[in-house]
Structure formats: structure tokens, C-alpha cells
Length: 86
Image 1 (cartoon, rainbow, N blue to C red):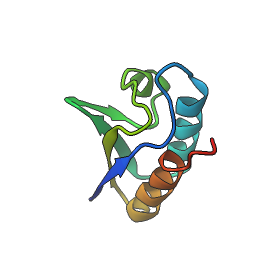
Image 2: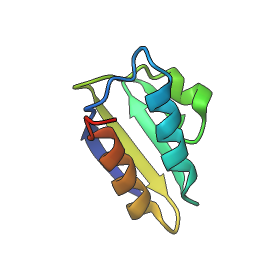
Image 3: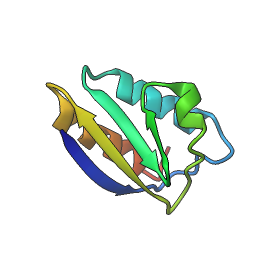
Image 4: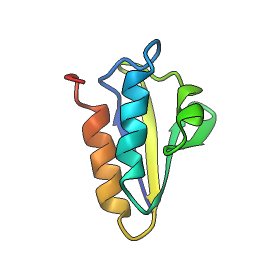
């Protein structure tokens, strides 16, 4: 299992598009991937779950993955979340 803290550089509080794109990134991997924000931990492949997080620019979240491609999955999730040009 890989777990990493990430400071979010995109604003996903009011727009569904960044969250939908993040779910697409997560869905490319076999690993089970979770995003934690505050007390919530949700499946990164679930659009409805991800929408409940309401994370935005500057917020710290944790990404964890467990599976054959866990390290690559966490790195790609981090790359998306820290890219301000989304």
C-alpha cells in the first residue's frame, strides 16, 4: 500500500469537471484508490463519492492505493491534483 499527502492546486469545490477528470485518472488503474479529506475517505473511482469531498485549492488530501500499479496510480493522481492548469 502506498499513501501520500498532496496539496491540491485545482478548485473542485463548485465545478464537477475537475472531479470527473480525477475519477477518469483513477479508473485507469487496477489498484484500489482512495482519497481522504478531513474525516472522509472515498473510493477515487466513484464520482458520487468524490463529489462529497468538496476539496479545493490549497487543501491537503491523502491519496492511498493498494494493488499491482499502486505507486504509478498515486503518482498520476498527485500529478493531476497539483496541476493548476486543469
